[in-house]
Length: 459
Image 1: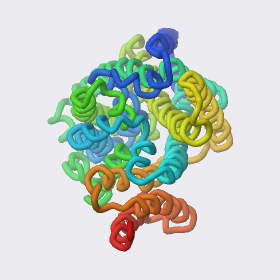
Image 2: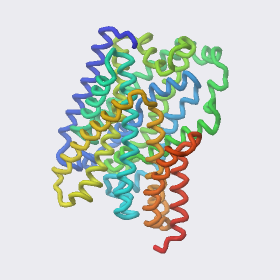
Image 3: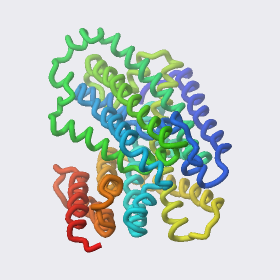
Image 4: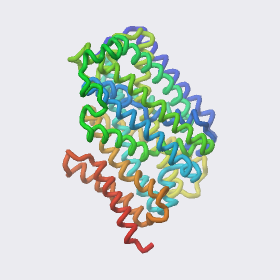
């Protein structure tokens, strides 16, 4: 556990209080289920960017990047580079068809192309994949809280769950957008200060080059070309497979706002990773024996003024729970829009859909709490890998096929890919070789089913 001063604690509490208050304020923007899920389709580019950045920039972009830089140098940049590239792709190629579709969810979009079976299957597998990632985020939050404060893991879990709920339950996508904007500002300011401080303490580029050999420390492929390219590729697939990022596109005031929000996100995210890299490498040169995951939190406490340090530590926690909150909103929106409204109670009112969505947020977080308390010591990355495999194999290629290969991909092939590819992903994760990521098995299966299934289909 790190040693916090009273000033640290006060600034942490004030920062978390500000975020919670903003989440509650966002409730004023919500009158019905459409406002909650897609902001009444009236959100401008800044809030679109806030929603994307607020979800994408989590523990992996900050603590995780500094941790990997501590051991591998600049190859740690691939998480934020891949995330930035994915946002650019989202804005340039997908914003127009997504926004013009009138859909609220990815399963709803897929149902237009492949039928109602696609809606049900994609809702189930995509929700499961996102749920696994929520578990990973809460585990990350527990690790951070117990590192800086002397509390039991269950207390840390309850704090994280409370923050997740307060982030989105009041305002939905308005909450993720408004708090996401605040989070983006705080993360950018915090990491910029930390990165510049570490860069100067390390003697600038000359000092770092004198401490570390060019390879692997200053190479983007320090862990191997295949490994590092795969890291960037998996981030692109992850963004192009997750409800929350598409929800931001559906929420845009128009195509221009959706596109600009995604592109702004793509330009803003990579520098965050660069700042974290300088911190990680400086801590490697100064404290080579610490746990790599401690690099960023310890740097903040040791080298930043206490008031600012408390704000930065709170920001790191916000970055983690904000990602979890955005994912919770994505799952809850699919459950309410694609399962409850379309399949269980088609005649329901907008008010009841809104109530069901908020109830889903509470239920999803409580189920997460149950899973987390039973797996406190499980590996965060293991949950993340399985989540990526499920989301990627379910959504990515069927969605791209529905947009760019309308005349070729047949509905029956689309439904088969959405149902079989994630099933094979799960089976591979349980019984297959650990040397091959389940994501690649799922994507390969999805590609084969879409292509050959469309060739032989008589539709």
